[in-house]
Image 1 (cartoon, rainbow, N blue to C red):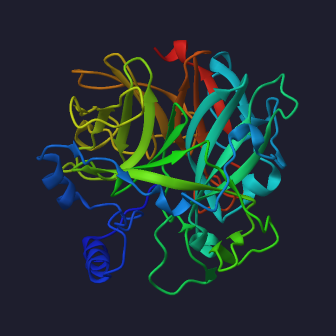
Image 2 (image 1 turned 90 degrees about the horizontal axis):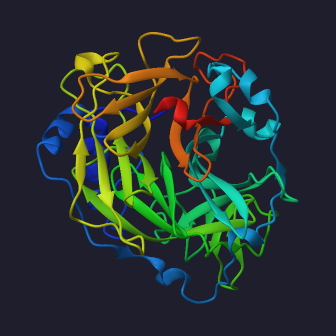
Length: 415
């Protein structure tokens, strides 16, 4: 669930950023969400994409790379139908396809929360990718992605591995761990991810899109033996807290006048990346959330032309604006939105899957599990995937019950 901050806090943080001479130009306090007055100004201006900024020089030598098939997956997810028993799971039985529950540690941890979901196939194996952000005592570790084997015929079916996300911007203030050179944790909300031809795009709230090459996973020489160090020391030893693998950012796209960018997903029909703006369901009428479509070419380069802007409607929220957008998928002239924070419940959940057709004055809404986040369409199978985020005793409605799961529905039932 995205965080709202006051204008005073935002202004203070932006002033701090401007005073740090050695801070990378990509760092804009990514976890901050602009307030409504800023967004009203932004919505009246043209959305644009700056040229690609290549940040990969820090891994150009002294590193060796792995691809997903070479990753040792050390955790076992739970298959079967137990995912339907998590708090607030309300999908009608006839629409369910399959689901996954994390191991006990991951479905109950309060230090990490899952947000984005994407997928791909490689060498005949189907994978899911899930993004997480760190919180509380683990916040300095930033964000991570999880690689999950979802091929029933695979020898590593439903095994997974967490991989720490890193970038080349080293901290400029004191940290609660030992930081060496070359790379550091990527401290972002990680609200959404998309996959296209080996590239991973991570939504970055105030910046735009961060880019990773999934064929450039790096195995950390210290393995899981060190929990309080990160980076490459003077002797060439690699550290990543207690993570065995890191995935380094290779570049980014700064997107103007589209923040807060809370999610991203791919539309393969015409090669577009779609992003959504999250504002809480209690947001007032002056905030008009939008979704944006950014064309990409065959190489995955985001284009600064042909950008589409959609203003979806949803009568559950103030002035029928589609607040609470946690995920978006786009096909033809329709958008599917994973929305949370509705003022009314539907079968134990305040979330909805909302289908909006361009030009309509409202959405068609369906039951959607409590705490639902991003969307991913697995086109080959016609599956629409999503996931839920909350740990027990999270201060949300689930109380002491487990809420986290990954699930797929039959997309044809929602068209």
